[in-house]
Image 1 (cartoon, rainbow, N blue to C red):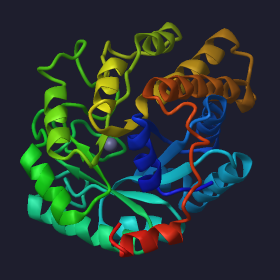
Image 2 (cartoon, rainbow, N blue to C red):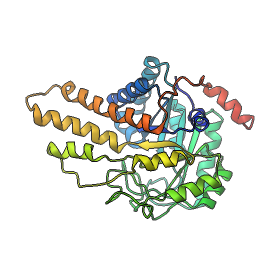
Image 3 (cartoon, rainbow, N blue to C red):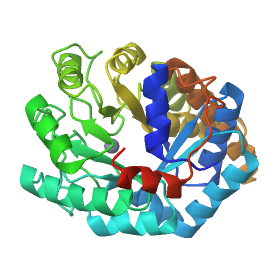
Image 4 (cartoon, rainbow, N blue to C red):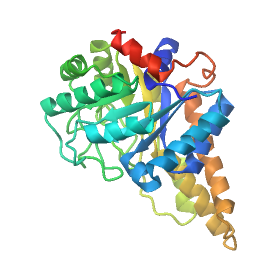
Length: 338
Ligand SMILES: [Zn+2]
């Protein structure tokens, strides 16, 4: 069933675990996540970026999600907008039926230019007002993440605008966001770090400081694929040309989860798994031409990665812990100042 992300993250905070948020663009990726959720009995967050919405069209995505709620009634499921660039984009997602939206006011509506703190507060506060009136959750962002994904991002390295704890506290107080994405050195895409990250480039200390300053705010780690060498190797073994690269080690994410991180965004790992599986079929069985012959192994490969992350983040086994609060009921709770 569709639930609000607020309820799902509140439950995660109570249970002391994190929840992976996996990006989707098509039916196969949704199927991979839902199968992994069923297998590991996990609550699930699926998220669609603006790029995904324009690739698949809103209605295809939304109805695929509804199909998922019917086929997997035992899984609490959040449909989340990843990196909304404006109040209008968030509104269109809420109107469509998303149960959670991200207003990324750390960048201007062009999705590229770092914005001012005042702009960010203003845009995010408007989205919070509109979303909470309907019971929909809002994730904001303070600080600027590295890299560019789906045409979104300032293209900076991850350390140019690391989140300041005082500013984060101000931002949360002034906007009333339910969850907060922070910049601690991670970036979008496959090329995050040139070697296994140390505290110099992946600022877990900063995350811990922010959590101490905002112990009740659900923190979100973006750009948190681990980019495992095994997945890179499969792609390169079958004709790919990935440069050596390092992601965010799972043990660092687990440290984050101990310090207030409730939502962990993972996209690249799934992309790598899918591409590796498809390349393998193309090279080993070049006579194949039915898309199912390579999409089935691709779906299976992504499911395996998602199930592994669900287990590592601790959400496994928690699908049946709670009754979903209907979105309309959430709206009343917000109105009552809960
Ligand atoms: Zn992101």
